[in-house]
Image (cartoon, rainbow, N blue to C red; front, side, top):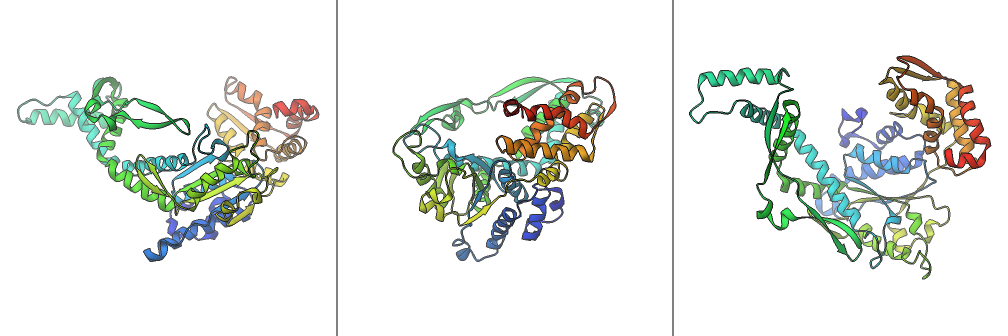
Length: 448
């Protein structure tokens, strides 16, 4: 969860506060932020209802319409982070109708289940981190000073205490020990399914537990490396995998978010000819997931009734009305994201947390280079990005990254070779780097 929201629970966040959190990462797009904030808040409201009524309240799925690079994906991703929800992003163009080569649409729900399991497992392992560290320390002590067969003596106890102090003080970090670890390397194989050559991640351990159970392998590690490896192994032992799977399925069902990008690529009615023959078929395959169905995953059945689906697309060629009517009705909230203006690009460079300029400054600071930009240089960067977007393909805020790479190429290449120094970028330097590329339309298409 973002730092500003860490001090208060999600239950206490109002839609206005959710929008404020999103404002810290995405510039503009107020309508989309409001729609996402209401959708998230409605999930909290639903949790307060009686179970009978809560089961009837389904999420209002959202269709975001706007050009590339204006923040559609970033908004959905930040919303999921804020909510602590399992989140998966897929591209509609990767899927094909049943019977054609490609991924089937249910794989997005299996991916959601996998993401939820990883999320819950990290939380559970963080909760037992202290106990896992203590267990790992005891195993290290056993490696450094194996216990005798007889009862532990006072001398042995004193020696172990001395070694424990040395371990905690970092005095033994370079010593190597032989560590016996559980061998978790299990071969996976691919299954040729009706939907194509899709890896189903079927584990032989689950099919033949007696064949691989209890296998170990020995590794020679330094104390520093062994401590972390043992801590991770102990944390995995302390966490109940069945409970993790159960909680993960519950969380995915109640708060999962699926972001379907490029929905406009599968919009359009059946033509029965050419490469788009399965467009409408993909839409019809998506429909049961959005309406609510049960998908079998390796962690159990996952119902999609209360999963929030957020779809997005530029819809330059097709229109939302080109989707099949049933799918249109399952995305009742539609918001249009506006193209970015020069002022928006200027704000993107400096305002968001982890803004582009601050990223480059932090990277070069690791080598003793203090990088700064004049106000006029920042305005010139935004102006150039707007000009190139208008002259070529409009890729929104992504253009800023390509421009900054061109402007800072020499500075980044030299890095700290010349020792600690201060580099200030002025507007003239920006123009000198970019104007030749901007004038040459053909060249700018390839470089910027």
